[in-house]
Length: 455
Ligand code: ADP
Image (cartoon, rainbow, N blue to C red; front, side, top):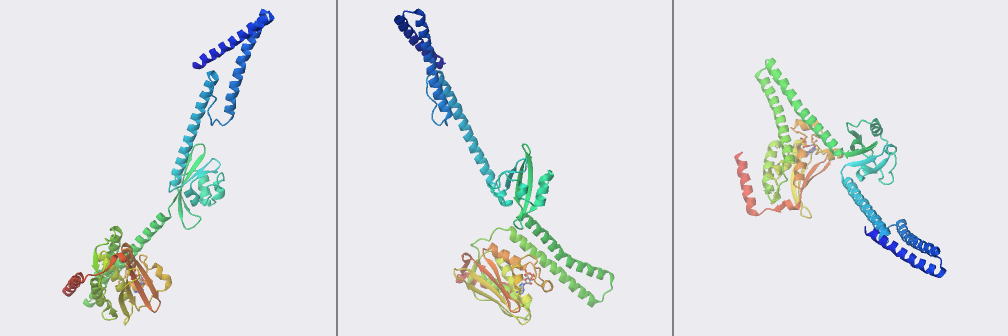
């Protein structure tokens, strides 16, 4: 109520001025009425002028951008100015808080791994994040306010959007490549729609791989099972001579072994996938491994090949012994199995520039055509299915090798030329290779020699 007080004071001041003017006019003119009129008019004009000046100042401030303070007049006009200023400042604060919240909100959606696209009732793009722009090949700025169906023309998408029933997500092949999107639409507000897109390429590929894998395993198991069932039937229903019986049982034994190897390889793969990475400080003597592998290879080859499988490397590798053994043995066994009689098979070791170690298995076998090489490590991939199966192959050997090498931070490299032979190289990272100390090597070698002589 301070404004009222100062307004009263102002009126009082005007009245006083009017009174003085009235007295002066009356004294000068001698007319009572004229003095009265002049006094009242002066007081009224004075009040009006003061109000006009202050009102004008306030209006001028209001017409501007209100960045500076409202005029600090006393009384009513000052009070009005102050109140307006406060309301304006409150509104400004609310607007900028809203803007900040909106910006934060949008950047949260921007950070989402999903594509987010907002459409108005006319299917025009109101907003989209970068992921959505990428999924639908849109330009987040230029394409705003454009109809989405003019930009994304895939019939499946247009049909889905316009059908209006969004219970099931739409799975859409991504236009830019072999990728796949899962698209979900939600309606909100007044005819607005939210389009969420998720890149499920990886998932689709994994599912396909899993299906293929199960189909392959079933197929691999079904074949020997069918053969076994046939033999059992034969044993049941036909009177066989002892010789025939023996032959059937031998064949049955082969099929059983085939399934056993397959299951063993599958278990190895499952184990490789499920176990932690090999520790970098468990050292395995390479020469010991090679001695064991060479002994097995001798048996498998039965003297049909010239074998040189035991270079004296004096090296230790950091990793899991059973896995390293399995990787190298798979390569050596393959070389023996695929190389025709009289061929040469050799294992060589060298340390590469930079300290990486390289173990190479070289054969003079049939070699592998270039187009097959990138696919050799796929599960169940075989260049020559019948040769692989004849020699007890499962089609899983090289995928096991690749897996083991990956887990040990190394890699499997294949060089081959049809008719000339193959070279399978295992490259181990420098950190997992060290020169064996003599005593440790001696122990290991002695242990292996003892173990071998027991067999
Ligand atoms: P498999 O059990 O069939 O041998 P692998 O995964 O070990 O399965 O090998 C995949 C394919 O690579 C084999 O089927 C064979 O065709 C080819 N292969 C592997 N090693 C050799 C080799 N040393 N010489 C020629 N071909 C090979």
